[in-house]
Image (cartoon, rainbow, N blue to C red; front, side, top):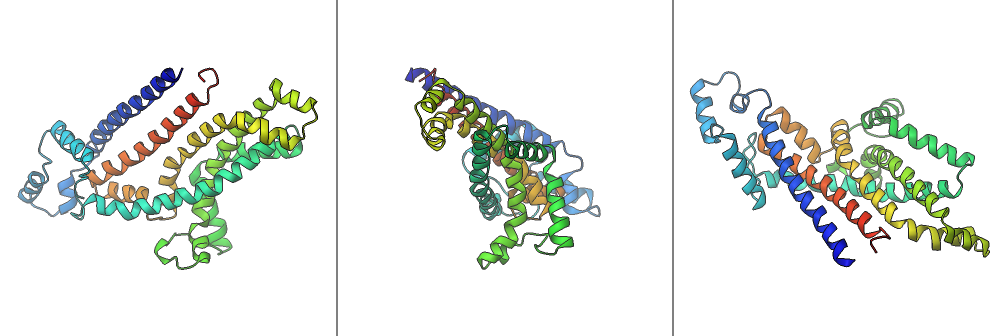
Length: 316
């Protein structure tokens, strides 16, 4: 059986690698199909045709697209991310600080969202059918139905414009104390927490309810075990696989949510860097940022698949 599990995990990893290659191919050619000429945008409308043509040759923009893709792909594999068209800096240098900022935002969101969502999901399952359960269900459905930009815009309107409690823009470089951390990260983290938590709450609730209805849990209840012991010792360990799978899938939504949140709050992360690169037609920077997001998403999805395989009792 162990060989079967390892084979299935190997297939998932192989599929993830092939998917990343296909996505990289699509990202490269999609960015090259953006309207406008890169050399003209960089030099300005007043540039002479000779200057534009010279810049195109210097940046190898006149080479066939497939050759540029192969060169770019090998560079990504060897760690050479290339240079930015807009400011002629190494892309790795541009991304390093921004990547740390994005990871800090995602990490703070995970630290808050996971315990919050698990607590609500488990308690909602234990108290299913009560007013508390119905309120949690209404809350999760409401959050899922509202897009991220609507939640973020409402938070800015209420807390920054009307109440003036929090800044509308996250100046991360101005963080010098714990209160500054709260003020700068509060709205982005809370917005992402709502988006991520809604899915985790629903999936956790469903997994725990399914486990609580199994015969061995009912037998433990007949033997006089307390509700807390049944949930902690019997239900949760057996629902751990689906819950971890739900966590990995839900956290993958951070990839899309971060792009919107960083743009709205002007947060200096990779997503904001990619959006700015689109405006300047900085193709290598756009492609690198897009591949990083795709790789992160595929990593979380692959982890979710592996957890689902390992937690499958029929395979064990």
